Length: 293
Image (tube, rainbow, N blue to C red; front, side):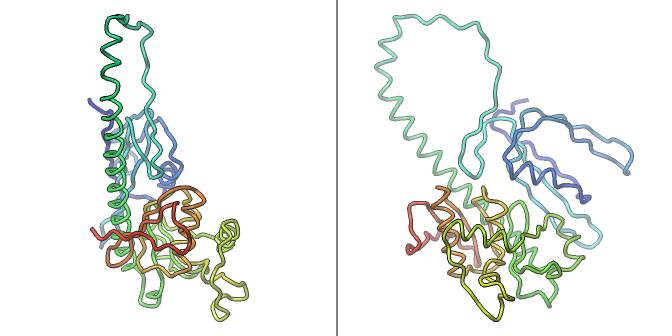
């Protein structure tokens, strides 16, 4: 089966034990092993064996009525590019029987070098454009998921903001800010301590906006509890996320400083589907590029 560069797609019902797959995606690690598909909770219906695989994407489909929540994994056993644009290549076994190189071909190869270099630069540019387009698409898909997950919140939580990528964060810092029902419906929801965001802001030399009526005695804690800040702190390698509300100025400056310090480009899609692009070459006062394709 041709697998190099192709994706393997696996879909299954969520049982609340899927954290391994989120860790696999977030860590960018290469794994090998087996996934056992169980029927009627006891019978092994199938076994999927994999080797040298990366998890490059996860999709979640919320539970509706009696239908269970579904997860779709995208695994790549070949050459892949993750969100940080770092190329990871599968290690293939190379034969030691090398073909002898005819010296008569050397001059011809030299004459082709210039053309090959030009083509290589052109190909790299095309690859970069494809990667950028893929990241925009991933960000827009994350925004659509955030919008759908927001609908699961009760009216009493309508002021909350949802941020999504492989996991889900919700604005606020109280453990009781979402219900047990919501946590069950969204098993990849993660609580991020507000102190973790404050520490990251200090490391970035970013001044969190303060609001004495909302900070609960800890200056800047309300701003630190914003869903997108939580996401970028706990998923510090992710650069394509979606948010259910437009970002405040404090969050925009936080994202820009993070992009500059980590030397990455961050894609964030907010309503009504506009993707803001934060590049490391910009400073805090520059406007992010907005892509509305």
